[in-house]
Image (tube, rainbow, N blue to C red; front, top):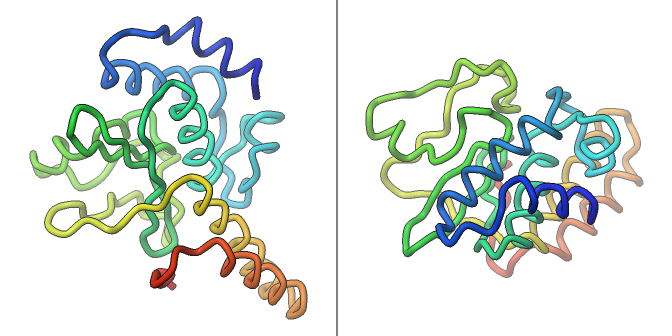
Length: 187
């Protein structure tokens, strides 16, 4: 991970514009690291070792690297999907980390764009590639430390699918320890 950050720092640089730094980081991650969307590739090991990612692992990786570049990051959960939110120059920037064209979605949505052509977008049940509706009230984000709970949630959900109730209960218990007070999961 440290080697990755060091290489990205040389490539992205420390431009004074946080917006440009965030955009360059998004592009560099898709050029160098994020190779293939795999719905079960939750862990950072899958991304770093094989370039396989899903919405969670891509968002966590983007968030961790962005934070090391001095950017203010959150992970946002919507039903069956997560994405990244940045705060740059008193502006909120929505980033679909699974898509090469997913940086700063707000202007695209304001222009009426509702989907991306990138086949790697999203992890919703239908795999439809439809952007989350971001106009109006935006969902709340969580900090990176709390976003780790989404890993536990996915682990629990997969354990349930495999008929492993005790393993699922342990994973959901770990998730509950990381959830912010008063929050409710989207599922």
